[in-house]
Amino acid sequence: MAPTPAKDRDRTISMAAEEEIMSVLKERLKEISNKTPVDKQENVKKELDNFYRLYGKWRGGITDELIWDKIRPLPESMLQGYSSLRKVDEDDHEGISRLLNKLVVLKLNGGLGTGMGLGSACPKSLIRVREESTFLDITMAQIENLNEKYGVSVPLVLMNSLNTDSETGNALKKYKGANVEVLTYLQSYYPRIERETLLPYVKDYQNIDSNEGWYPPGHGDLYESLYNSGVLDKLIEKGKEIIFISNIDNLGATVDLNILSHIVKSGCQSQFIAEVTNKTRADVKGGTLIEYNGCVKLLEYAQVPKEKVDDFKCVKKFKIFNTNNLWISLKAIKERVVTGTLERDVIVNHKALDDGRNVIQLETAVGAAIKNFSGAFAINVPRSRFLPVKHTSDLLLVMSNLYNLEDGVIAMSPDRQFPSTPLIKLGPDFKRIQSFLKRFQTIPDLLELDHLTVINYSNLTPRF
Image 1 (cartoon, one colour):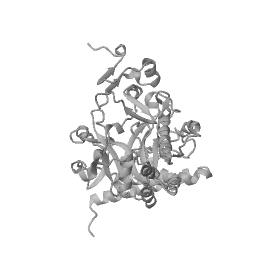
Image 2 (cartoon, helix red, strand yellow):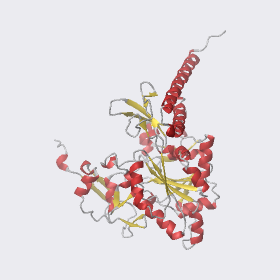
Image 3 (cartoon, helix red, strand yellow):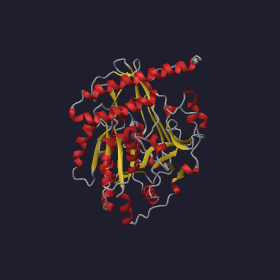
Image 4 (cartoon, one colour):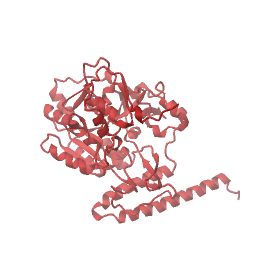
């Protein structure tokens, strides 16, 4: 009998080791599930089952490692210009009503305002961004205006995290009389993996909102958590067909009737449409859509090999980036979740916790699901549909006379002579909102601004 080649022996040993890890993980997750309060056990088991599958994909090496030379720009068949869409007749109220009654708006509402110096108890959606209006106020005003104007019922769905759910619930009380049905649900929480053992170190599902052993696995979890919550079935039962998803801090992500009409009139043959826009020097790290092995694929900055980062940042090669504004068929989402055919690339995130423990988080992106849906393509939309507020420099822009706010829609002032937004850089003294507001007690006129940099030179270390 011929001896087993060394390479095959190593592969066999490796496979045996992986099987052992998966077996131990399964028992660990079962223990956690059994210790969960009875009223939460069913949902927790579903979440842990999803985590187990994600972990298996990672350990099995099915992370879709990219072969850089196979990456291609999106062909015309997968990328459509916004200007080519047929415009909706704004006077056709009856037709617009029929369109809107098929629609659901979902906002990703899991983030906190820590990036702008607010405490861990403040959801980002509750930051005041325009006069006294918060992100949530603006979103509610926009949808209520649509419902009132066209006599429809477009519901708002909020995907909250444990960090934002309670405060968001309190904030929603003031809209009790609003003509907007609001549905909320929680995204999943997965156990962090200890880098040394490759296993979760948590023993139970208690106090997960304050336990560093748990984490939300990125907005790619939207599909499973939407289904597990029961909200997806509820929307489909109401006759809703299309869901428009965006980040709640993107003030440009409003309901676009032209895109909605395009989807409906195609008979929803395009189950997934992603909005992209042209890159600028401020967007070089933004995820982009590519053609890969004949399919549309999302390429995130975190997936780019270090030696290819400069290539990825090249605006001439990667001309567009993903705005995270997505239009998806609700029935197609349910079908993919139920059949277990919703594949997304695994993003492996290494972190060091406050206690010094080195851990691994497995995450996914919501846009990465595009490759699973038939007829998927991208629309190159105007820059105005991407107006995120990530930093106080962004806040300065939207608080200024550069923009007007009406019925929940923020639009650039017609008095602005140039369509591009100014480039603003504020020093570290302006990072926290409180410090920013203290220094900008009056918002300056920005209508003709091209570039602004503000730095406190007294805090700089002199160089000789």
